[in-house]
Every structure is written in structure tokens, then in C-alpha cells.
Length: 378
Image (tube, rainbow, N blue to C red; front, side):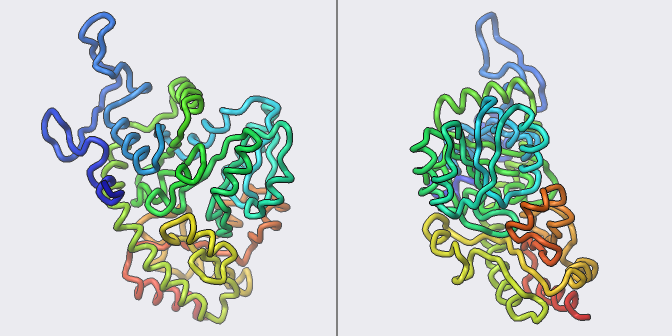
């Protein structure tokens, strides 16, 4: 079955008991047992819920994983992954990541005697030379947020596995419709489900999709013990949203390509970061490991004053945090998503007061271009 069909029909397709096409919302915290040592397969919704299970099975199939865990937020998902590692571990991370990840590492897990090192994961030789005896994992985003740096998933998998480490890929930007890290050697693929998987800016969710019995067992223990689970209602909303993921991504990517072409013509735009540009450093790797370029664009303008003026003048495009929804959003990373990232790290990757990030939606692209044009008029 093709992915475009899987996302519409899900794992079970419909409710077998009633024939309901919309999978039911099981709003029950507990489940009746037929008798002692007999179970329907469900005991307590913190452990498992039929609605959440349908969502998890669907995403596991889309990502080609063995098990998916649905969390109450993307940060809860990342937290669960970091708990896989004992004190004394050394973990390599992409130097360009969503700002919440470095904050979580520095403010919480560093206190558990875990050492985090931020490096350019597009540089394979640097990754090799950065591995220590206690290196337990490599954590990357590709494309990265917000500088759109591309890392070679398959090559990095070989490097970290040779050191007996785990390989974790944040796949939020491209989704399993365009990139499937587990098929390229990753052990874990994770998502902020709030973004493209939801697509409507009305759910906060996170997902961890894994392969390997030991990893799944550890994740499962943390999952049921801490209880940062996705509710049945939000699980149902996510099932509904994922049904349109393919058509949304196609339209968003198509719009993004046209907006990139237009941004390149604007006098006040100095740099455009989009993995679909032929002169992007990661263009060839992107073509090798993905089935598309996605709809995330970052660009720099001539001055910080121009950036702030544009943010105040866009109308159809909303100046707001988050990404991946049907509405086009513009974000100012230095003051929003990456405000708490250390200055030495933002400076190293090029995040500054001239940088804007654009999450392209499904509106008519002519309207989006017209809005950009009026916003850039002094």
C-alpha cells in the first residue's frame, strides 16, 4: 500500500465493530476486565488507549518503524529520548537545532552529568573526530532549524553505529512523506507533531518512532511511568489531520518553490536558505535521501530594521511562532524560537537579527507574494 493511501486509511482503516469510517474517540480512563487474568488488551489509558494506539500504529507504519509513542508535546518526546542515556554519557548534537532542544540539554540534563557537544553534523570528518569513548548518541535535525543545514543521514548512521551509539533524527521539517530516517539507518525518528503532522495549529503533540527491542522497551517504561501521553481527543484530531498530510505537503512545497524564486528578486533580501536551491550546500544529499524539499524557508535582509519592519507589515502572512500549518507564518528566530540559545552558538551558525523564517502554507501563492511585496515597500 502506498504512503498516500496509508495516511488516509490509517492502520485499521475503520472501526471493525461499528463500521465507523472516523475512528472512534475512546474517552475512557479505564477499561473493564472480563475476569481475573483476562483483558481486552486495554487496562488504563495512561498505558494504552485504542484511539492513541491507532494513531501510533499509523505513524509507525509511515516512518517504517516498529513502535511509535505519542506524547503531549514535542519537548516531552525529546525529553523521553534523552532519558535513555545514563549519567556520564556524551551526546553529539547538530549545532543548529530548534531552540528548545539546547535549552533542555543545558538546563536539565546537564545536571544529570550528561555532556552535550554541538557540532556541524554536515561535516562527516568532524563528527568522526568528535566521538569519545563515552559517546552514546548522535542527535540531528536535517534540514536544520532555522539555517536549513543538511546532514547525510546514512553516512552519519554508519559513523555513530561503528561507535556503538544511537542515532536520533528530528524529522519534523520533512515528515515521513518526504524523508524516512529509519530506512536510512537511524534508530529513532521524532517529531513535533504540532507542526506538519497536525497542520492546523490546533494540537500540541510529539512523537517518537523507534526500532530495536531494547530501545522500545526503555522508551515504553519511561512513557508509562511519567505519563506525558497524548489524550484520546487530541489523538483523534491528529488521525483526522494526518489524512490530508500528503496533499498539504505537496501544495506547501509547490508554493515554497515559487516564493523562493520571488525572494531572490527582492533588493532587500541578501540570502535565501532553501534546500531546493541547486546552489545549496546540501542539495545533492537532499536529492539522495528525500523525496522533496519541503516548505521551510529562511532568509536574511539587509538590516535588522528591515526585518522588524517586515514583521510589522505582513498581513496575510502571520507573524507567529510555530510552523507547518496551512496558514503561512513568519518567525523571527533570534527573538522567538532561539531567544534562549547561547549567543556563541547562534553566532556560529548564522542566526542574527537579519534572519527571518517562513513556513509556507497552502494559500494562493499569488496572494502570498503580493503580501511580501507590500511588506517590503518602504
